[in-house]
Image: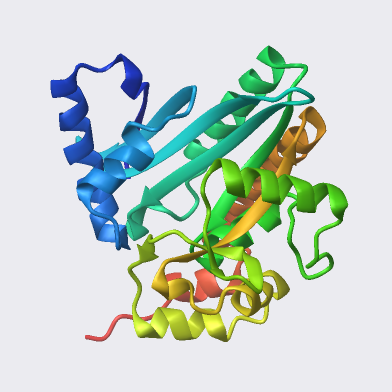
Length: 271
């Protein structure tokens, strides 16, 4: 399957080209998510108030099949300079598995931001609306909060969550649980898929579902990851290891040493 990718900065687009970009990406978005109209999507992804926005666009046969937007915000207070990274992404199911291009693109952009802002405390802030996003993130880093091991924030994380929730106007679904917020993005999935997620034994998936059982209503779990060079390099290593494992698995599935593959090749034909 031949895929192409490009990276764009929507701030450099004319209004006409920006609207063309909106139409192209919203066509993809609308097949993956419900609950967000085109104007809301435009404000979230294209016309973000972030200081820096870059959008990764994946195409197949010249048609967009996925996008990933990364936004960098800078906030200065009297006592602290903060950088906040936020992302939105949507890839059609057929083009998700094994595709690390967006991950490596995002990683390089994060490294650029770290290098160019050495005196800033930087955090990734997610309001994750599906367990798959949370599981993917916790697979890549052990520094994510919250987790099964650390469900409650320490004082530093509590301060960060409160500060960032105010900056981004994140409204809790219930006052008793300020870490689950109203987002509105609802992942389109079948009842069967939702049922499969509820039965997954992986601890990170179970933790997400415990914290955000009504994610199908467009609720998101606030997720924080401190961003520094060590954490980013650890994520890079995890991505490389994941890619290598997939390559080894593919090799084994096609190998003459694999009994299943061998059996498949020598099945007799029926006359």
